[in-house]
Length: 113
Image 1 (tube, rainbow, N blue to C red):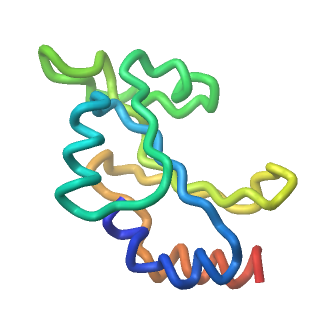
Image 2: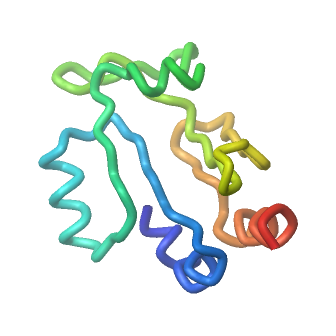
């Protein structure tokens, strides 16, 4: 989420809203928001119900640690237009990597003007 804050002016210019879905608990999300000054809507998906709706559960070897979520989602960045249609999606093969801000900026410019 911190990486998306770098693009905040570009998001605001295009009226783009940020929504994150993670396996973090609500308290972890609140603490991260405060610590890093994050904006956007942050959702906790501990049981992976939202992750599964989008078919983004990591079916590889990376499952949750004891006491954490039962598995991890595949890191995915999605841009949807004003009608909710997905116009761009980037998925990482490495569960520890996310889309680079410059890569997302190029997608913003190409798909959302």
